[in-house]
Length: 315
Picture 1 (cartoon, rainbow, N blue to C red):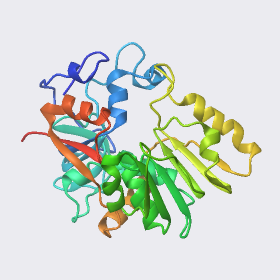
Picture 2: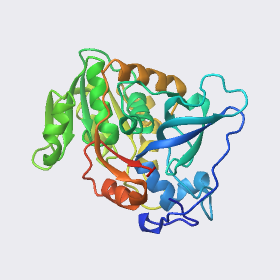
Picture 3: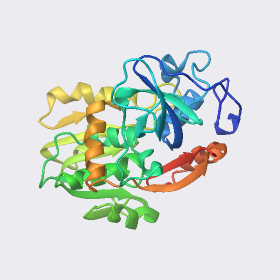
Picture 4: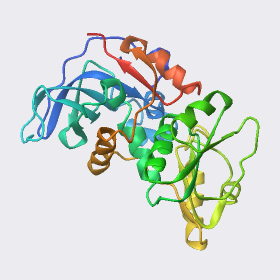
């Protein structure tokens, strides 16, 4: 699925493109499944505009979007010794919404045997984001996850639980049972009740609540983590809140963090071990055929997804 200019989901077209070739340190993967996250929508639309400094100022540098991937190695570039043709892998690639994609060998790992391709394709971006956000959580702490029913949130609830924390998940009515099934000891239905309690960490995912309101939920030395936001307009969504947190952090006993979402090899290794041990299970809400990618992105943006959405190339 490709486009030439920034567009909405309906602007994507099915078209034939040349199969990419792996360069030094790269791997060519036959895509078996590709995860859909909010980043795909931002790359597709070029919103907020600040993101175009990375995606391309006037026109997108990449005609095909997508990062999360799971598939089978078809060929490897020079210098690659960790993977070989036939290996089942997961991680990130460039232009994952296609039948073939190229990625760096260091951000592609062997897929655990107990995880399906669809599950593995849901992991890299969202789970690495959750893992980065939860750094510092220890057993016995109380963690509030706002946005617990989404892609990042579903991983955050499981990871914090695996670390020994007691998790309260904030979600809508339709996702309460789902969030409990992930390991949350309590839930708050934000459509019916206010946020209450005192927590060692508050993780606000794609939220827009004021910083003082979130800090009021923390212990005196608690940690507030804000990641991703759809608030802030078409120019620089979330930048104002993130800057405000960084500015205030040196002047409070509480810790205010707004980490960037970056997929690192060490984090993928940690997640792979948790997957293999059964301590982390990707929650896949629905799968779509690759040709139905516009519908998959629209479904995600409507906020109905419980966990992750995945697209599958037709073979």
